[in-house]
Amino acid sequence: MELDEHRAELAGYCYRMLGSGFEAEDAVQETLAKAWRGRDRFDPVRGPLRPWLFRIATNVCLDMLRGGRRRALAADLGPAAEPGASLGEPLPVESWIYPVPDRLLDPAELAVSRETVRLAFVAALQHLPPRQRAVLILRDVLSWSAAEVADLLGASVAAVNSALQRARATLPAGPAGSAGPAGDVDEGLLARYVDAFERYDVETLVALLHEDATSSMPPFGWWLRGRDDIHRVLAAAGAPCEGSRLVRTSANGLPAYGQYLDGEPFALVLVETSGGLISAITTYLDPGLFPLFRLADEFRRAGS
Image (cartoon, rainbow, N blue to C red; front, side):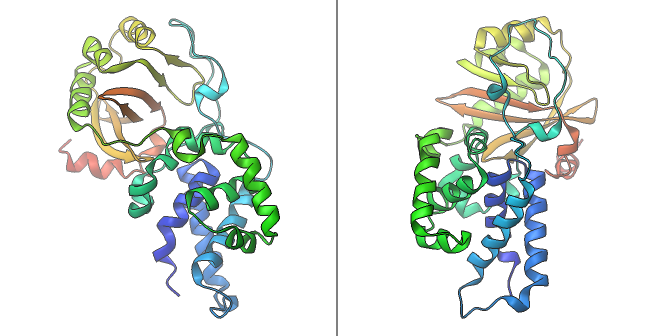
């Protein structure tokens, strides 16, 4: 029974369901453990291994989602802040959509549906009831048939189609439209961003931003929209991150960086680009993400 070959695809599914790379990894581990313990109950005559594993994974995710809590992005929690406003109190880790390392995901799936693991789309999924969420992911992202989903959920095809219709009504643009086009990574733009960031060159940093770019810093609900407001905040802050070192990684199909400050893990920074400029920067002020992204290894390889 080749369980590990399904790990990456299961990770992508569980991440979209749960909105956290940590929880997705836990869910996959639990799924494979349950499958191994129950391997005697698997009957290949009744169907292949993949849907059996997805049935287990779905049940694991539904169990983890009991209680009704919903992860979100800062923009879902309130309007953009005015420059000079207080950051406020940090919110609990479980309040946030958390990133997932690309290394956990299926490269083939990521190549053709990268937009469906973007933060905005995963956040939008969290508005759906868990079973509707599963239906939409399986049908519209993973391209399962209605009959396959019905068999997985123990429901009728009519019930699955009804759930899908309701889910699509909540997310009318569909996966690609909700998350925006993936596009190619502009390595030149990223190189200029890293250079300006590490030198804390505010004018150059701001020049790389879209006019309506956003910036957020979980676990704080505070966030900014617009190049002018971001400029005002950066210019007024002094140089708190001067001398930082950015180490490249990838998350949610996006370029990302581990930010080291004075040689210590400080934040994970996700950078979204569009049209040759930066459209969004999400800075997770949580060094606990570094082991998940294996950033200590990357830091050593980069010659810290």
